[in-house]
Amino acid sequence: MIYEIFIKNDAWLTILNGFLITVEISAFSLICGTILGTIVCFCRMSKFTVLSILAKIYISIVRGSPVLMLLMLLFYGVFAGSGLSPLFVAVVTFSLHTAAYVAELLRSAIMATDIGQVEAARTLGFSKWQAFRFITLPQIAHIAKPVYQSIIVNLIQWTSVVGYVTITDLTRVINNIASRTMQPMITITGGLLIYLSISYIVYGVFTLTNRSSTK
Image 1: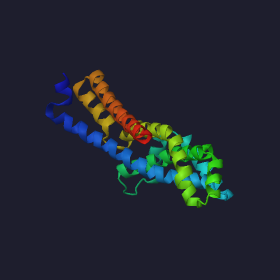
Image 2 (image 1 turned 30 degrees about the vertical axis):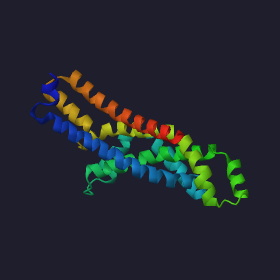
Image 3 (image 1 turned 60 degrees about the vertical axis):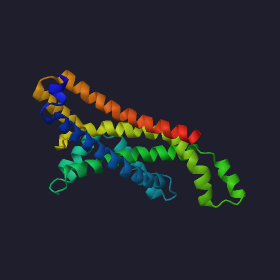
Image 4 (image 1 turned 90 degrees about the vertical axis):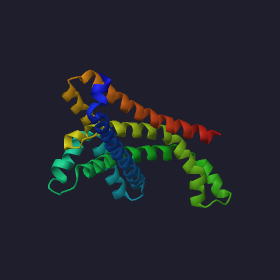
């Protein structure tokens, strides 16, 4: 049965292609979302009231909106008729969504750092950049790392809705195979195990970085 569902007639190649699309969307969205989230964080903490308010509104709206609704709004509304590929629109959507969470994560991590250590470093002759690089940044990374790990895993799970905008990702491939073979229990369980494997690879990478940093 496993052979019939997952291997026969190059089914494994179809699953692999769907898997690669899921990874591609997740990777690009994570990179762009992290960069955008950093910018939004600094705007949120800016002394300029307008920037701070705009960043706060952006974070509130995006975090409070279902990612599927945001995806459909951009694909069928904002970018409708633009000629942009569904894959590009998906990356834009998940980048915007991820950025809102990253921005709040970074803001919380910055606010949780020990200001006294920075002040002490400044009195010892450290420049602002040196104090940030050697004192503040390591603390931010330590505080933010566990939550950032969850953001990555959640992002991978969020991408499972891209089938609504005609993208043949892993979830859609699994659904198509389940419909074709009439074996939804086994097929969906196999897809679930693939998603679990991706998640635990992420956990494993973070665990290895934690161990290497403590040596």
